[in-house]
Image (tube, rainbow, N blue to C red; front, side, top):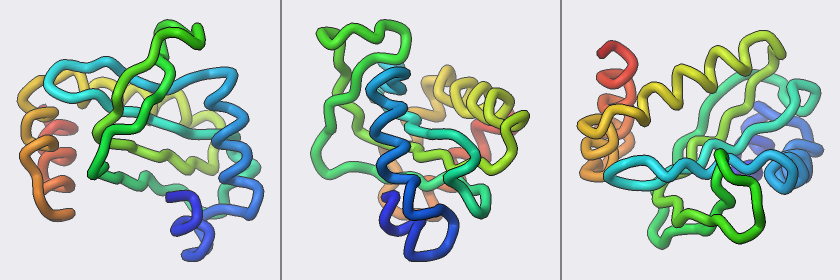
Length: 130
């Protein structure tokens, strides 16, 4: 995902390593209802242009749980929402909004059922307005 963002000019070449380093210290796996998700992100100095990239994974990927950063507690993330934000003050706000969307089981079910990028976007937008 970071490679796609780099290719499109959204992030700097330091972004991927910064995501991995931050994930080691501050894990982003969310054991949400319906399906588990991860929200990897890093500091603004690694970002050129703000965006959120979404990937629905063919196979779940293990992420350490956000609320419990021990190496033992892992979730199987089925979707990854990689945030590339370029304003420090917006990080907490956007992260809170994204987590708020995941608190709605009907939105997670719509995301899980989505088969196209249009359906994923529609589910996210619907979740943001509820």
